[in-house]
Length: 253
Image 1: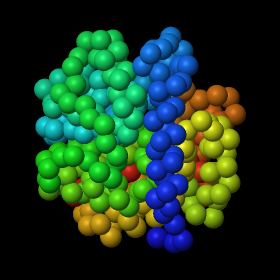
Image 2 (image 1 turned 180 degrees about the horizontal axis):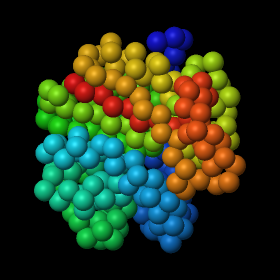
Image 3 (image 1 turned 90 degrees about the horizontal axis):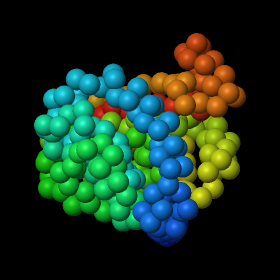
Image 4 (image 1 turned 90 degrees about the vertical axis):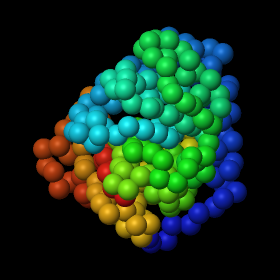
């Protein structure tokens, strides 16, 4: 897995910073559920719906679904709206983020079966108790990737699936540049770019039967310059394996 170095003290500080962000944000605080927050999420919702399309068969077979890193829980609400018969659990590191779940439930006229505050690598669920674990553009915030994948493997049922959707991903040689870019764009939250070969190696080592990445340079909700970049990646497929791109990860226990 290369030279990845985990720094627990640094990650705890980042987790604290993320929790404080949702508490104090003028846009995303539960005390100020602003129209700007809804507008921002509207673009993400379009992407999320597009991302779900290739995995409808996987989702339809699941009975108990867990979202980790769900933030305010809007993606869980959408899934509940689309698959009302399924048990949907939404989790996030931040208690303040999940305080806003009630607004999205009201907006979509659904009720999530359960919500819980937890770390991605400390999930308070029984072994082999979940059919599907998913997250949408959230895994690159987790940082403790190995611990997270191990915990997901623990709670998944045999033949259960893990979906990481719309994750910024790259090769190791270009990671420093990609990391600088994402932290410059959004400095208020801990950001990273997944080194996709490392993630796949971790999945193999942990014991997943199937583990793969599907590069999907989606153009939805893009500004002009990124749209040109991702359009090129979409036309010249092999470039996504060499340059920073967006990827979906599918793991099967």
